[in-house]
Image (cartoon, rainbow, N blue to C red; front, side):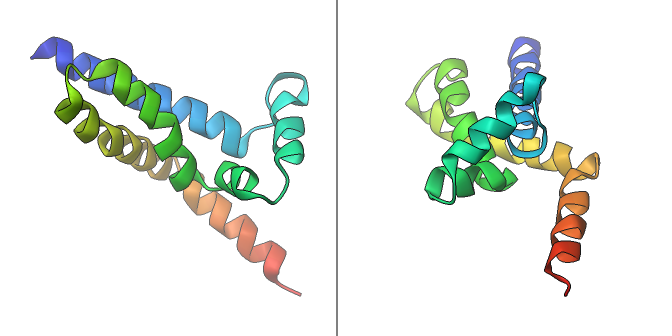
Length: 107
């Protein structure tokens, strides 16, 4: 049981870190900024701008790796994403992002 909780905690941290890097950071040598610029306004670019959407896609392969069977994998997928979203909210990331977006929309 302890091993599964450890894997879940590490999984949530991994999903949060990768999602936060892609969605909110420039990355080393501005690699992520250039990647987001290349993605443009298509569905990939929009997914890269949405923490909720991106965390689901990042959690998918990790759930496949951590789950012992398809039921566990299916349950881990949204659980890892939800954990990353809760962590992002706890660190103030989504609140800051929505505040910045609101400022951009003001005339």
